[in-house]
Image (cartoon, rainbow, N blue to C red; front, side, top):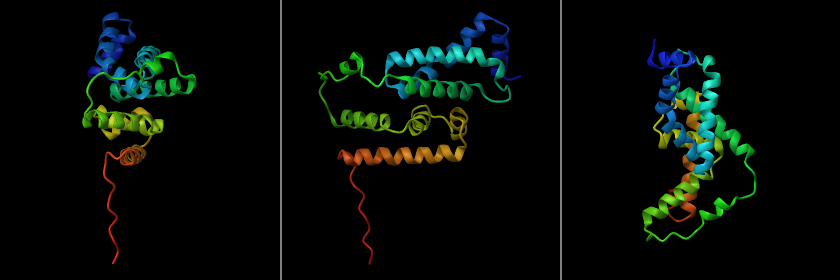
Length: 185
């Protein structure tokens, strides 16, 4: 029996220490995915809590032959999708606080990082999910595919399209030079 399967089995028996162990093992990954997909710390914390509620409610349906981590991250991605769909279309006061001027000196790397974040935030949610899981969390294609419920080929396509959209955004902002088009003889 795998370590994941043993942990789930202990959780299903109602062992509080096992439930705590499961949350501690996966909470940083879940919270990081939620933060990146939702871009609001408060929303990310709320959704991360919902994720673990869902994990414990549906734990008996987990396939013990598969790794636990992609299954939990898949729940996180789905909860973020639901949250985004329900989010009110009007900005909150907290949204305006992010627009306060920054007192730190700026440099090119800060500008690039900000534009990169803006580009990623502007992606379709499917593209953003796979981009964040691959580039920010180092997940392999197979685990991403399982987490988002799509074939590996679709994940690779979405990731490629996300990269192209980000590159286009950075070019439009003058942060990446335009590609020279080769002249045909």
